[in-house]
Image (cartoon, rainbow, N blue to C red; front, top):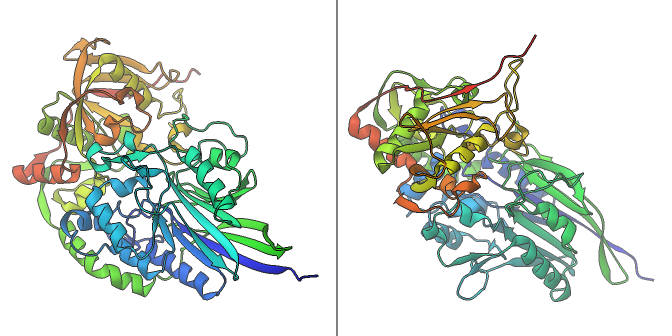
Length: 533
């Protein structure tokens, strides 16, 4: 009788690093407890253990910090610092994330060419041939002489709703769930894989325990369906939602999601035995390793340093002067009562586009606003995404529907206690960037009323907005495509496209004027009914 053989396989996952290679906060250069350099130290520690190991990045790597922006826009001829670091850590593969497309196909193609590892994606295909566009849908590694482990890459197919058409021209984004059903079966039947790992740049559309929907079932996230409907998946690595998930299985599939910005390293451990000529998974578990208190990896710091030095010089370039106050001290207050920073961004959008109406958001709760002497650091610390502008033609009914979507950001409020953010905007991840504030119209939101009934005033040029009339509105390209579940904007005529990043537009606007002024016209307000005693 043959003795059973055993093998322990470890899978490490990073996801949604978003250019955070070194542990600093770019708004003030203060140190942080997150970032790839710290994660790299944890990866090296795992590699030193000598056990069979796979290291995979799950997407959204090359965009998200001033370092990444500076490389893409001002230093693209140099090697990508993000790719250099993954090469240094000997990654086995990476998966295409939706933000990989943000700087256009040339920069993405360059990143793929510089990588000493494959980029996986089975469901983004060449429109002409139907073949996986990035070359490899999967790879296979053999351990313990004959243990075949397959890793399949998938990406949320919702990208066409967000990305500029020119950046994804010639690509077809196939349904990730349907694609997985085809490829997982092939991996078992044709490749003879003993273990199948799916690395999916997407998240979960349903509660992991109850199966209840946690978001509109648009297809943006299909992780739950992948676990429930695709037979033969052993491990599902996820991302995109920036959630922190581990120590969980769905329908027997072990899952993990390591947050964002290098705040966690995902780790999956599989215990396998081979009996009667066949490998079987005996146990599987997932966990998250924290980089807090971990020293950053010296080799990663050295690789990034030349790029970082150039970015820091650029960040400290003076742009102009502010008369007045645009500092952000209370993010919730900015969303409850008009703030000069938001009014300024909207006015810039209207001035540059010629549109009479505009909307924008305070993207996160760490946006500092503008000081008196404005630098590029202040620009990119407040406008953190590489958005461009579009003017779209929409109806008055669309404007009202968009404002109702925005108003649902708040929990229904009776005037007592603190105003709270609705779970729809905070779970599974904070979505402050999906609360818009408008200029060019006058409106009032009453958050004591039920969702869908909160717009109590809506006027344009002093008159009630006609639901059937058409209006030209400028907004960022993400929102214009319906991003953030603003589905009323999808497919609307594009009157004007301004393909320059907003950070550049804001900087140029300030530099041309030398001094800008903080103003408030108080065209909108959020109100509530006082609690009855």
